Image 1 (tube, rainbow over the protein chains, first blue to last red):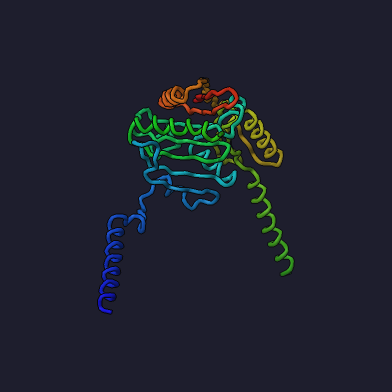
Image 2 (image 1 turned 90 degrees about the vertical axis):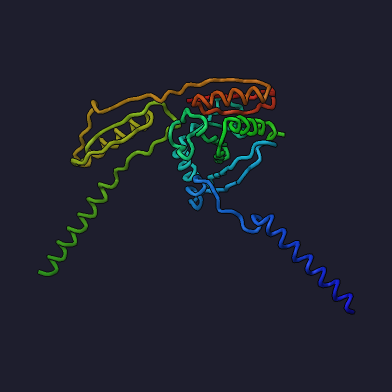
Amino acid sequence: MNVKRFWTWVGILLLVELAAITLCKRWYWFFPTRDVSEVYTKYAGTDGLNVVFLKDFKINDSVFVDVTLIEALDSAAWELIERDFRIIPPEEEDFHTLETTVSLWLAPHNNYSSPMDTVNYDNDVIVMSYFKRTIAVFDVDSRNQIGAIFEYNITKTKIKKK
Amino acid sequence: MNKKILSIALLAVIGTVATGCQKETFTNPQSSIADNCTIYTVQYTVDGVSHTSTLYGEDEYNAFILQLVMMAREGHEVCFSNNNIVISSLSKEKLYFSTRDADEATKWAVEKANEGYTVHVDYDEGTGMYNCVAIK
């Protein structure tokens, strides 16, 4: 009887210890960080917009960047995004379909309505699907990341069709 | 007597509201960069109040002039001078590039983006080509 109780307590203590270790090592699973981008803060809660912030989104094995995804649910919300980001829409005559056309450009960090700054290290990458009314802002730290983000999105145009 | 004063006051209120509403019917045209290349910056006065409007494209400009004419017909004092029109062109330089190689398409797109272009890319399954257009 005492032996059985002993092992029960050992089992309970092990479970408590395991829970404590998990909490220490993976605390952000339970208490997610509030560290979000400025563009997320600007548009989150705006009527007609779905806004998502992804921390350390994997572009490839060595490039991880913060991304803010914005999806306009109606034309009024999309007009706001078009104006704020100075969007140049793709023209139908240039492509056989706009459905899978992806648009990419560089814009000064957190100042997307201004013309592109020629100083590369302070530009973010904006990726847009005009057809789907979605826009993604990739927070860039280095030139190497710009190439990887372009490659990721351009390659995806092929994958999408499969 | 009281009824007469009340009627006159009521008419005055209705008249004021009606005039106010009439003035508010004039709205600044909304701009859309997408469809045209010419920007008109126009200065004008309506009933002594000066305004500045930016108009994108000839269609928007013509609609705006028509709106001013209508306002003048309604009795508003509209001053508009041709000398105040500033026309500037949005350069819409377009560059095309097609390749079967995704790396080449990426390289070209990055290069053009660094030069300030917006790059549009689509993969054409029929031809197996990445069609890229850079616009600025």
